[in-house]
Length: 584
Image (cartoon, rainbow, N blue to C red; front, top):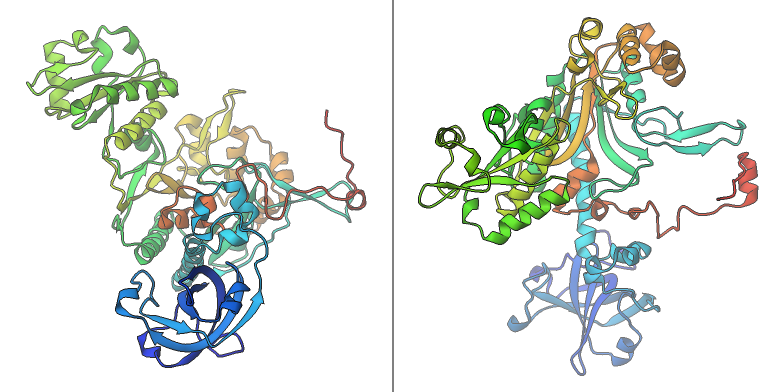
């Protein structure tokens, strides 16, 4: 490091080979320990901690924790009994000959720096600059930086060129609420912050660029979740011309495997990652975001129960989950599972268990003949102490409920391997679904996707039967990305949107640039956009995405540090032609 008036070394740099040198360090006072005539300070910066020994009691009295100081003095080896193996500089210390207080911490700390993660989030976010001094928080942010740098290099190695697309754009119906920005020059008109660079990256393909990427900010006015930030988030956005689905999946799995291999010691599912159809995922796992670390699989048992005289299972789909060893669990386990089932909206949770004496017991055994019981054991490979749970409900709800029971069982039985990253791709999404309120067809995923079978499928198939070239990448039950082979043909776009209730005029007014561009020769193209925040969250082992965001909003979409959103002056409102309505 270049020497200047503040330091010759960082606080994490000194080692035994530096003993005898006179050095200069600057940083924050982490701890102060008075040993009667000798005071020990831990001096901290981004790079680590160095123990400082001070003999000047007058100087010590002027220093408070978190003050910024510069010290100089010789490096000495610590006595064997005082070596600190927990820090990299733990075999040495600096004996102070000179000290300069650069900036005093004169206010009481709202929390102990090293304990900030145990503090209420409201206090942490109001003092985020202090929270970020905690090495545990700081390391997440540094990890984020390293991951982004790694992905940039990786994409360049794959032949992608980095572009920057606009932040101020036009509002378009893309699924979430837009953040609107009023125009001063154009009375009554608004810009929107982009929900994603979707249209711009497709326009880049139409423009003749072959492989695009960027670390793209995306802005959506939607509610917060543990894995979703309100306001803005970032994604590795990329698009490829003259590409098919498999081309995109190979790039994504190579980038994800390389990233997780480089930044984690956990086991990672090998490439190629599993390809699972949407229909299979919903049936076997009850979700299109399956956590494959959970070995439990849902089985369709509707046909099995079609001739069983058990009223709750009559004329509705039935699912089964075989849980190995569950029969050995206590009575409270089954009570907890029943309570959970009721909590998520089920009317009950039937089950049967194979006992130690090889008999089958459970609330619904009396409805099953011996032949049926034998068939169950054979078909589902039920062993002694296994329990088979049953989920029955309407076609719309049964898979989702079974998925939640599968997750709960995996957790309660400790079946999930926390030392693995299990990736998969979910493919073959349905192009259209049913709007619950209107009963009309609607897009289930990205409206700019190419239907499998193209225009012919749109013209001849029942819309419910049309699959799209759409795909998601999932890791440990977290959706990291969605993507698609894009529609690049105007006639396909017109027909697809017509099925979803849009006219050609709607296309021309809501998506004018893209619709117009497709009339000037557009290449087949495809892409996806893995979420940076979620990737880092998984790598850091965090449960909440705000732990890997430098300056996050809280769950109520407020920036407590900057006090945003905030009121503005009447003059500012007048300049952008806005008058506020009184709240009733």
